[in-house]
Length: 96
Image 1 (cartoon, helix red, strand yellow):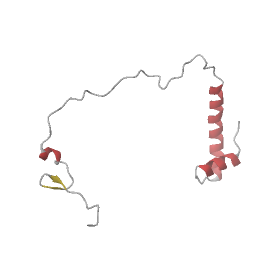
Image 2 (cartoon, rainbow, N blue to C red):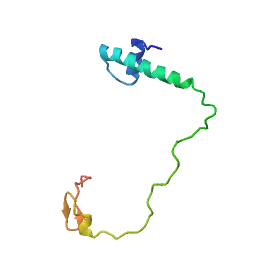
Image 3 (cartoon, rainbow, N blue to C red):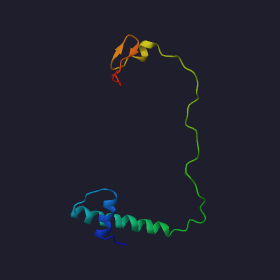
Image 4 (tube, one colour):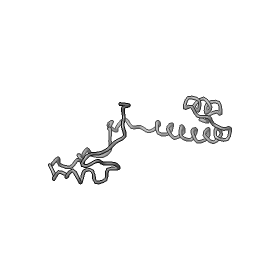
């Protein structure tokens, strides 16, 4: 199935893209190849394959939630861009 230039322009309009004539010609060919590939995939018999969300086994990759040594106030603000004593200084958000 070859997409026409008019169809590509309509798709570009929906995507709010302003394409040149050269881009329309290029994308018409590329999108046509993609659609042909999907058509080939739809021809495959997948009735014997169970639906699945992932082909990988489910596995928790989280570490154990164990308490650690707390940071000192000096360690916490060591890399702060601006600080005042043991506090972070930030730009005012409100006018007052």
